Image (tube, rainbow, N blue to C red; front, side):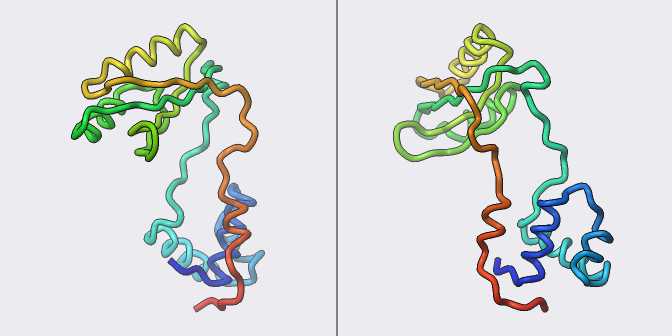
Length: 159
């Protein structure tokens, strides 16, 4: 989807001040609230804006260990394994990957002993042949998209 300058400005406003309402963003951008609302809905419909849930820090919930698990899957069982991983609460993210492995999972655990239980649960998922686990030490850069939006090309005018 191509974004014009107004879409980009609205996205930046939403990312920089997520608690402000659309009315406030519209006022700051110098546009009508209805225009902001229509742009917002269009960005949602096109899949640019994908969520509204609060971001929750697993560490604050007592999950002090974060690890990345690479899974090697029996051929033809990728979807089955992904569905099985949905039943493991500590699996917070799963991606199909290229290279050494078939799936990559980000998991959280209360401590190293709990991490071992989580990994054993993953290994017990039908279709998982083997895993490799790497424990994260420090998050250096949190998940972010604001720099991507700031880097979008400028110059197109709003419709």
